[in-house]
Image (cartoon, rainbow, N blue to C red; front, side):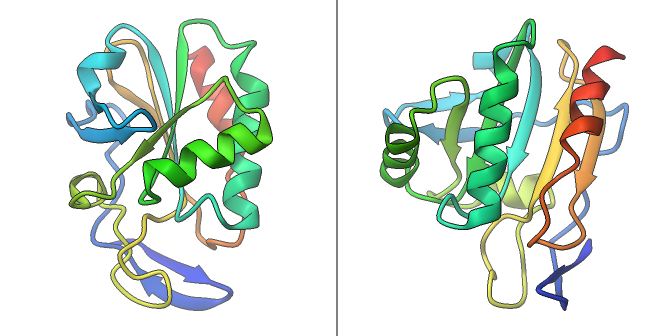
Amino acid sequence: MAKITLDGTPIKTIGELPAIGSHISDFKLVATDLSTKTLANFNGSRLILNIFPSVNTGVCSASIRQFNQEANRLENTKILCISRDLPFVQDQFCAAEGLKNIIMLSDFKNGDFGKDYGLLITSGAFDALLSRSIIVTDESGKVVYTEQVPEIAQEPNYKSALEALNI
């Protein structure tokens, strides 16, 4: 399990991020139109999985905005922003912010994504939410970069995540 902090207080996750060089597992997540998306929906694309606790926090919303800005210049790359927020909340956030370059997905139904990817927080104030993490894959779904952000109140390392796409 990963040991992270929330405002300096230690909290835990259910496991560890997928290993570099491994292939990411299939998933079922809910899009803002309430359709179910799986890994197959993104076959052949490089992926940046921007995973976070909730769109209703400043750091989470900042990461969505930053990746939305970067998305236009990335070839054959989809940015999946994943949380346990309801799809309605995700959609309202994107509409209010004018964000159109990212794909919002929700793990609200059963939390299987968080469990399968080792990202479900198991203690503290954010118990049952997803930890702030980045997973980058190549076109075949092979993991080329991961980041478990050690302090939830910090933004991820955007530069390192984006540089991983040049591998």
